[in-house]
Image 1 (cartoon, helix red, strand yellow):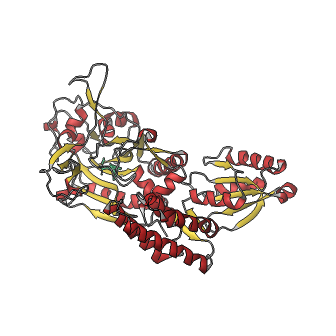
Image 2: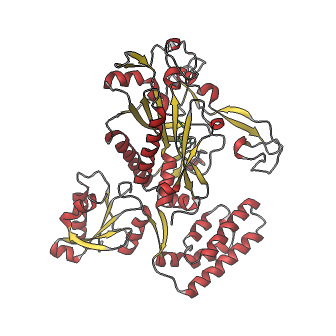
Image 3: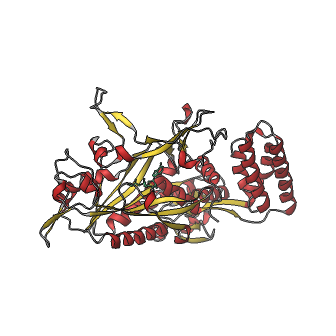
Length: 530
Ligand code: GAP
């Protein structure tokens, strides 16, 4: 079963080093996160899969890596200076600030409805370039990677000799000064985008829009997100971004959040290339482009058939890496009962959880929302016991739980049981797993086993594009659990038989079945299944 709450994922990410709050030792920075050792591997694998599918496996794509800092005029003519705004309101009572469309007229902090009128807040971060900070030196951190592709359209066309239709792919950082960053990686201020600008003949854009929708859904499926878990939202005209004629948002069913956008596929017409071009009056633009007196180029394509210079239309599939990461984790996440715990021990946990919830209800020090959240979550766990037992750990890590005395007893009741009867497992597609293979010696103080396991790790890793690790920091059962929890598809154990006949066991993460094969075949075995 996929994750049921965002907290399960937050807790896993922290526990196992996927994601850390940025500059945590100084209290962090709101809406900014760092990728830990496992997070960076999973994130890189997601990006590689996206790049492979969209650049290498097609014959109509090029790649690009444009700078984050761009001439400020880019953002004037893209329309962002004028329109990249969110509606900001202040609470007059508690002085907090909110995005008006997220709060339904009531301050989430103090409940007051005494709010200011919404006013536009531009989300672009500003900085200065060079030693003098004045009006001429200021620049923006890009709020989307797309503009780097548009302003380089002429360069790519001239150097690649592409014919329409063709596209340019780019992965990189984007920055938005979100009014209220929230929900872990979902809405942050610094994030990465995987964007494609696909240039087509005017008049063919609707057909390409549909084709890209299908192609993108197929990719989501290839990374473990079935179509049934994505809804397509055909964005109504009054919600479209300033550049879009039509947009399909792919909405993933996130735990806790419900259906939210993970990717947008926009039909951007000739708005962008037109807005960044000079001599616009000669270009027969269909979009209401921004009048441009500064650009030194016409971003056009010479069509040999009609012998005319035309401004291509654009289809833009744009996905956030963090939101993709969260969807992949949510979908892969599973808490499995490996064997049923004895009834009497389950009832002890039931009693301890009931006592905990009662004491949460009585606790005057907790804020009412914290109390309600803990009780609501706890009751859902109570109703699903024993299967939901591992979620008690997440419950105890939630804000406020540490202030409830009965939590200690509950923790004591469940900890051993969870280790013995449950496992958390990430059913990640092997090509995404941070670690593809973990190699263990059956005994860590046996020289022969250790030497063979270390050699085998090296042999599997050599020339592979996936990661292989050696581990001897616990008993085999514990090592399996630890690798299951981070999604390692194969665990290889070197045992005494290995020393005699050169074979090892390979354990499959999902079935927990083991096969015995020659050590020399492990590399081909795991590579062939990824
Ligand atoms: N170039 C088009 C564009 O930027 P967008 O819908 O604003 O369109 C595209 O952003 C994707 O970037 C979104 O679907 C989402 O996955 C991701 N994204 C946008 N804002 C984000 C934020 N504050 N935090 C995390 N991801 C974000």
